[in-house]
Image 1 (cartoon, one colour):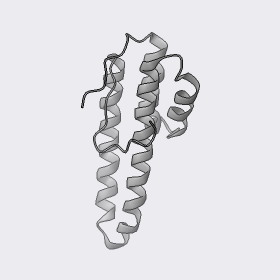
Image 2 (cartoon, rainbow, N blue to C red):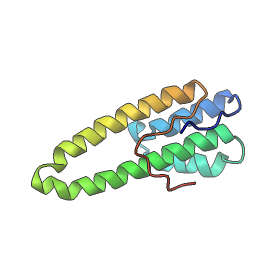
Image 3 (cartoon, rainbow, N blue to C red):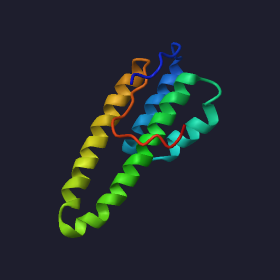
Image 4 (cartoon, rainbow, N blue to C red):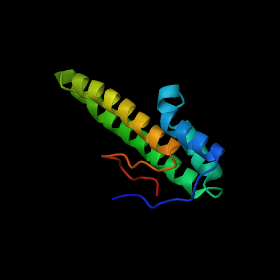
Length: 115
């Protein structure tokens, strides 16, 4: 399902959207998309959509990682955690590129907890 087409974003909206997607890579994790979503959701639909998608993605990754930790005791969890890390890195970069083009990327296997 393709997300709705949004109005052309401004420069600041693009930057905040890109930072929301890259927040796990730059070391602030779930905090940045949460703050961006709560503070700026009424200013820009584009920014709200991207921050919400990034927030849902980070929450989903944390849940998936928590599920892999007990599996690490029976060896299968370690490769799953490695694949989860590599996959989340690639998907965050793809979402950042899409946000820089003015779109909104819908992550696969994303739990839609924040609506």
